[in-house]
Length: 77
Length: 368
Image (cartoon, rainbow over all chains, first blue to last red; front, side):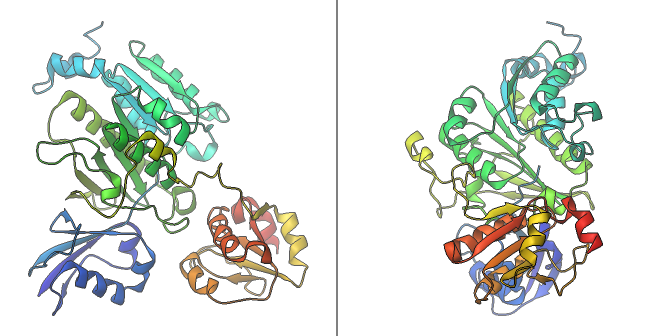
């Protein structure tokens, strides 16, 4: 199935906005594991996922053509 | 009361006299008179917010001026709240401006924010952001949150209910603060002046919408803004269950906000001269914690490269040197590294951080 990734801040430096074709990823927990395996730098950073523009607070099913945003915290002013 | 001053927004369809009266009755606290705070203050003062408080304990410095547009070159060295209050009062003498030349901490924040109806967070560090978030959640004060990094910004409204969801807070997105050095800040990473200008102005717009009850403020939403593409992406925030907020003032006072004034430091901050002395000892290792792409490039025979992103791996190994001198561009990440090392080694090693970093001692590094 196809998942669109949108990333922000320093995460965009190593995960660019892209559409990926993946199989066997049913939910956000599995997708998180996939991201951290493929982009190990992500493991060292605090970030939050949003699925189709909604913050992911617990494991949620991912459907084909979903959009997942990956957002780090910003503190600058 | 001069209606002429606000005439153009009073005659605006969808705003009007009633909205203007709401602004005039509002009390807004702006925390941080920096890149975000300056434009927010200017527009809120001009729009006729009746009482504006400004919190900042810092003075104006030359490197502030490209983005903190309330200040002039002649203001360098002066307290930001004094300069800002004076200029804003000249711009709009009809409103009240209250100076708070202090740093907000656990023991004073509750008292100060209790006096205001709306809080705007334009600070520049995570300690302050979590402190302000928790205090606003505790007191149920609507919090307009703006933050920048690189060419991007984030904007949100917390602790303010909409008709669907009771107010969310920053911890619903990021339950715990990042470790020091995990996320780069403006001093380390740089910032283009216009970006906090855009975000600070957007934050002022959200404050005005919230107070005047017009449009759809970003309540329970976080907006990401990208200056390079002019793209915006808005995410709905829901309540998380993986954190605890202080529910009483006593609980709040017992929270740990990594207030540097409360924690005794075990490492020592040194100047370049002391670094040279230590360098001559066989038992000294000099570590450059900057990322590999950063310039100036230092002599790798003298400075061992351990970028912050690889620091964890380095810390899992042992090394023999007893004296450890950590350096980076500005002496901020090296302090974070020093704290981490201090935690692991305690008195077993002597940990030093070069204060002001390579930039401050540029001459020394360029000649060697």
